[in-house]
Structure formats: C-alpha cells, structure tokens
Amino acid sequence: MLHDSLHDPKSKEVFASYRFVRDLRPFAGMKHLDVAGGTGDVAFRILEQITQLEDLQQEHDASRITPAGSVTVCDINPDMLSEGIKKAKTAGYDQQALNFVEGNAEALPFADHTYDAYTIAFGIRNVTNIDAALKDAYRVLKTGGRFMCLEFSHVTLPGLRQLYDAYSFNVIPEIGRAVANDKASYEYLVESIRKFPDQDTFASMVEKAGFCKVEYENLQGGIVAIHSGFKL
Image 1 (cartoon, rainbow, N blue to C red):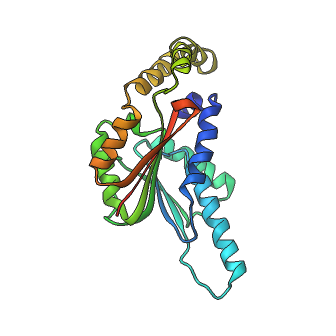
Image 2 (cartoon, rainbow, N blue to C red; image 1 turned 90 degrees about the vertical axis):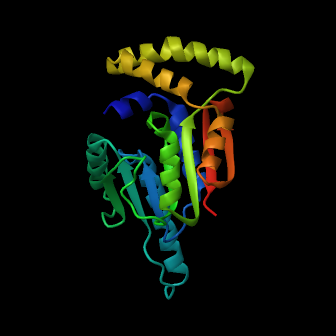
C-alpha cells in the first residue's frame, strides 16, 4: 500500500507511534476511535493494551465485571481498511473488539458522545477541512474524552531545521524513487508536511473546536508533535 511504502522507511514515525499510544494511557473497558488508521497499526497497539489491562483486572478481582473495551478504526479509503482487516485476521485479534468502518473524518458515521478517546496519527494533514474534522472529533467523544493527534510538524531547533529541510526536499523524494518507484508521492508527503499548521496554530484550532487543556509535545526537535485535548 502507498501509506506503508511511504512510512515504513521512517523509523521516527514508528518510535513516535509507540510513544503516542503510551501517552494515551488506554484503560480496561475503553471504547476507542482511531481515525485515518485503516491499516490498523496504531489501533492494534491500543487494543493490545486494553486487553492486557482487562486480563490483569480479571486476575486481580474475578468478581469485578467490566464491559469489554473495543477499538473502531475509521478510514475514508476502503483499500486501507481491507489491508487492516487482513492484518487483524492474520494476527488473530478478537473481531468483536475490533471494528473497521469506512467514513470521512469531517462527518463521522457515529453517534454523539460515543467514545472515550479519539486518535488520529499521521492523517489529519491530509484532511481537506481540518476544522470540520476537529469539531466532529469533539462531537463523538464522551464528556471527559480525550483527543490525541500525532503528526509531522515544524522543526523548532534552528540548526536542525536547515538540515531537515535539505533532507526532506532532496533525499526523501529520491528514497521514494528507489524504494517504491514513486518519487511524486514522496514529494507530496514533503509538501503536505510543510503546509500543515505549526504547533501553536494547530493547538489554537483544537481549542477553537471546543477542547480544553490543550497541549502539545515536540518529538525529535519538532519533526513530529503529539497534540492533546479533552472534552470537558
């Protein structure tokens, strides 16, 4: 798939996604929505943590009954979803706890106040109307629910910024040509990162959508950033 061929060579994204799930702090019985995550990579990690916590809770107190948690993967691309479903079956994930739904981030096919948390990893920069997507994220979250976004961002270290720009515009497209025979898609990747709002601007957009306690954390000097907010 294009998404995988673009992203697998970049170890920074793999590291950041693990950090992203850790910071989310999944819990037993959690009802989670992962948007633009068709191939399931982030969703699988979240489901694994939910399941582990539920098993530990059951071992500690067998009389305590907690409704089973679940993860819903929503993506506008049916081919991505098909890939995710295939990977989930191969890995043996519980099909009752993992759902794949085709849908647009700007108009999610879910009821209000449905989910405990919403994640979108390396996908929101490709959304046409980011403000609409943020508002719909707010809509589907329960009160107290958490929004988290992982995205390539703007380098904040002056020395690193020049090096990263040179690498992005000169090296990454050539990696695309050599690895995937697709230089144009890598050029689009670089351009989409550059056009995405900087950290402070995006944080303001998250607040405008209604979220509280909005904050962000830069990883690798701002190459990647984790944004977070709560529906209170």
